[in-house]
Length: 145
Image (cartoon, rainbow, N blue to C red; front, side, top):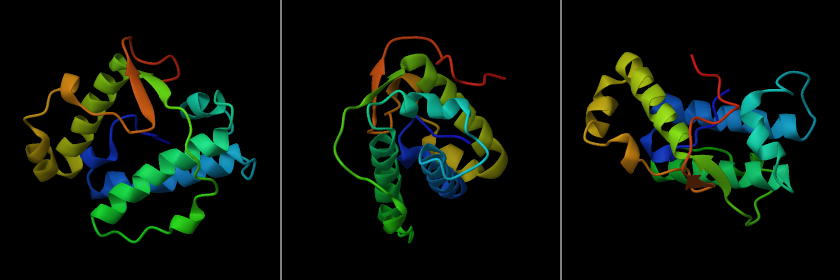
């Protein structure tokens, strides 16, 4: 499961579809509707919110908006709760880590997308609108290889 902290605009087609699917799975986990993934580290930052379902709903909404802008037909009705809420902090180190992680994935599966993003550097990467960047290292919950 990968719930990207970087803006969905950077994801390739496969990455965006996977983000949608995995975010919907995260929503099910937070709703208590699954057996697996209950302790997945990517969910920690959502669980820490006053309303985790609201937080994942906002996250999903922005993934949906990006998908719609590309002409994809994601089912908006699958988002359980969409209400404005507070942003979640994410560290600059986490964004840098995810940017490198995405670039490695794109080298394998979508070199053309990687070329489109080539001029961007980690410090200029925009976070997913759900997140507010704070200075710091890679997040503790990240499974660094």
